[in-house]
Image (cartoon, rainbow, N blue to C red; front, side, top):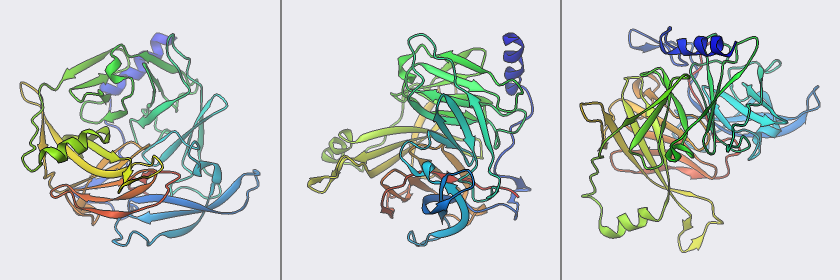
Length: 365
């Protein structure tokens, strides 16, 4: 039975392309699609029929230039999703929760989803492999825009060696648990590559990308990076070396792949900011798949913009299709948010706690 399940899962690499949340027709977006929004908070107001504490969802349309112009919706969402531990990740507008040994995929935070009948797909708890743990999660990724798609596979990357995958639409939902041998991937974030039709991760050093196709995994060596630091003085480089840094692997709708290094500082002027990270800089590298794969620094990604969050799966869209600024990175962290011009690293944004630091990608009717 398990071999049959693996066989069906492996057809993801050879079957039809995954359904995308963003749809194009002759280079244009469908008018029925929603704008991209950032989750701001929920304003508590009542208790639901399920005895849940609920509140009105507050979002921010990323097209708005005013970062304080938030929109309060009539959509009610559980207030428990607005806590630091309420969700473990998000992908394609679905958030994941993990409690009482049950992993649940929910569309509660999707403004397009039903207010009266939210979708909640429960999955059994993955088996913990030897010398692994399944309590702390790095992030969650999906291979298509909805876990209800027959071909959709959900990946959960736990802190440490374990990567678990499951097909939510299966009647008998089972996990395929993979133990990653290379410790360089123990704290990595997983994403789904439409280009390679596999789940992929960037190692902690940033010199290897691992690909998992559900039956075996392989690692592609990126070779040596090309860094260009001419615009920095030594003191600036030393300051960045003291920052907290995360690496994010992002795939664009053009098929290009980028590595974004996100630098955050725990200092606020001359005083500690209570340990809350403040954005400092993004560095963007484009992966070039030649005879020797390299990652070359760039300040121009063309008519693209990138969306990053501390807990959500990153994504990229064509800026001109959504009225957005090209060559920008939009980001949301737990304590600050904004947009950054990749060319000159100019930041525009705000500060404040984000209980659910996610962007909701374009959603179709």
